[in-house]
Image (cartoon, rainbow over all chains, first blue to last red; front, side, top):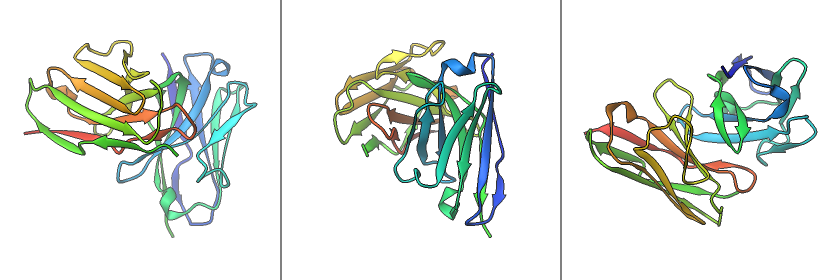
Length: 116
Length: 107
């Protein structure tokens, strides 16, 4: 059974950094592109970016590219999202997804709240 | 960025109704549109990929159509368990972008 489990969310102060993780199981992680998507409290969905199966290529939403970094450790079947200089508008639930044409598998999400 | 304009924002429906919602892309996205269902408290679930392909295990009352800039998602015989928010997303060009969602509510 495919499982994606995000972690690392929580309350963080504006300007701080945070690293989210997504542990994958039930499939060969190194065979798939992976992505991060976030959903604001108002339910707006925003694609953050994705990463090639070997980690050699990433794409980002232009508005986030300078602050967010996606990486992966295939030996650990883990996807990461490094967030820096976070802002109140980064408050959202962050999902990792497995990409195979479409995002058929999503994690349960991890909530990030940016507030002082 | 490609803007996906989804309509309507919400619909009041009854069990058994035929439900149709639309997504209009600000530029040609070919057939690269997916439809997701999100129930309250759950993660999104893929229903339709590449505009018209039903994902594994998705009931045939869910259908998608369209290409280019205009896409339609239909539930042919609304069931109570279909109450959710539905999102379209284009993956034709980066960054992928979502519609704002259509919320189905009981009349």
